[in-house]
Amino acid sequence: MAKLIKRFAWIALAIIVMAILFSGAAALNQSQELPLNELANKIEEGAVKNMTVTNDGIIKAELTDGTKIKSSKEPGAGLTDSLKNYGVTPEQLKGVPMTVTDSTIEMILLAYVLPTLLPILVIIIIIGFMMRKQGGGAQALSFGKSNLKLFTSFKEKITFKDVAGLNEAKQELEEVVDFLKNPEKYEELGAKIPRGVLLMGNPGCGKTLMARAVAGEAGVPFFHISASEFVEMFVGVGASRTRDAFKTAKSAAPSILFIDEIDAIGRERGTGMGGGHDEREQTLNQILVEMDGFERGENVIVLAATNRPDVLDPALLRPGRFDRRVVLDLPDIKEREEILKIHAKGKPLSEDVELKKIAVRTPGFSGADLANIVNEAAIAAARDGKKKIDQESLYDAIEKVILGPARKSKVISDKEKKIVAYHEAGHALVAAALPDADPVHKVSAISRGRAGGYTMQLPIEEIRLKTKKQLLAELSSLVGGYAAEETVFNDISTGASSDLQRVSEIARAVVTKFGMSDKLGPLTYGETQEMVYMGREITERNYSDETASLIDSEIKKLAENAHTKAKEILSEYKDALKAIAEALIEKETLEQDDFYALIEPFGLKKQEN
Image 1 (cartoon, one colour):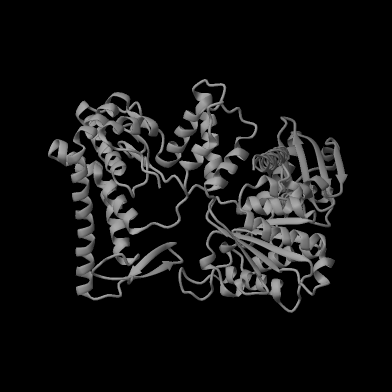
Image 2 (cartoon, rainbow, N blue to C red; image 1 turned 30 degrees about the horizontal axis):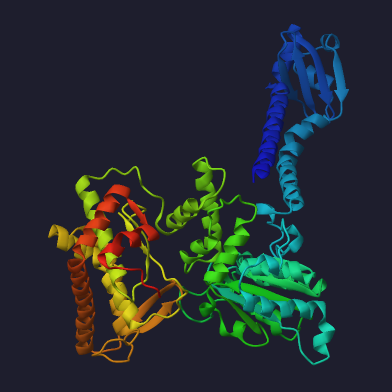
């Protein structure tokens, strides 16, 4: 972009210089217009130094004082005869040096040709510059060409060995790679090459990384493009670019064409959400034809990635187009540890670093999140002047990613610090006393992000399902801070607002989604639909007013029971509550081992899931 601006600046400067030169030349050649009779008077007075006469009757004269004048005579008439009529004698005329020439070329150029040609010349220069430019914003004259990139443009080669976990996804893609390398093995059995492979998964789970690994393994031409690059403001450009992309891939067959974020052009047609978009739909239609139309490409596999498979058009997902759908799940605890090892390569780790403990503290994290944690830990270690990344830096990076940076410089009063300490102690104590609650990993009274303090609870093993007992224990743990403030200060603060919001969400889900209410039974209430245009879910009510009232009473009952249970635990272990709060006031943070060592004398031990 900077080079483009610089080139246009030079062009503008050249135009300004040319304009100044031409205006100066015109000013130098500018002469005073006089009638022929006044010119005759000047000659009679001897005030004319010299004259130039052109064959079209233009007379230019220079006076003795340096003034330049211009006059004209009748075409076809001689100068001597014309001046004689005004009283100029031949003797007087002979005393003035005279030159007879044709019409001056410079006059014609300055007066007529240059003002016309100069703008045309400037336009030609600009168009030529744009046609030579092959990229950025100067592709104005190549709308219909796709901006395909070959795999060779990547800085480093990636293979399946560089992708941790995702074993099932790699197996699916290894078959595609083998098909391209050894098509005869499959053709002997009548197997046909898949036309399309759709990579589906949450943001950051490794879809693009997996595509790059396929490119590294396949050993065939690999073209990649973003789906948003197909769509332009001019109708028909997207379809043209699609044809060009597939034509390029077919010419290099066997090859792979990777379309990233295909939901940008592959959204379902005719939904009426967000208005019509002819350009996007024409582009989608062209992709459908190219993948499985009358003209079928051979040995070209279309690899696409999306995190919104639910909004894709059914015609795009049918067999014959995207024959294979590969789901990339979020990594489990073992895969998270493997991913951390990959991202920790080349980084100096301290001897005390245990990546398994980091994997335990990061359930639900994607590969991109884990890479960010390792990077944040390296930044923190460098900021603190450390030579190696230690466990503390990694723990701090996790909390920074989840909650935000620690606000240690925030000044709070002793009273507020005491409230925060007892609030977090209440969360931790209730969680530790309930056998179905997740173990406490850390308790802190340090403000992070918008949270005044935080209690970190994480399961020992990977959990994909939650029982009713676990959900009820989570409700009690959430209201533990609220109940602790009531018990100790006989008052409550606004610090429990986010906890109560989460309590409301879980309690409503228990009643209306999970069928765990004793009175309402194993039914779900409310139809959930996804707003494609808004990207959010909405729930439509499909039950009566009486049922709505019963739902509200059941939700309230769950919250009240959780509150009662939390108060009972805090009342039973009030000495433990005080010990935890005082430790937080003094140390501000309690790690898992320190926390359970503190409460063990009060009859509480770590619960194993």
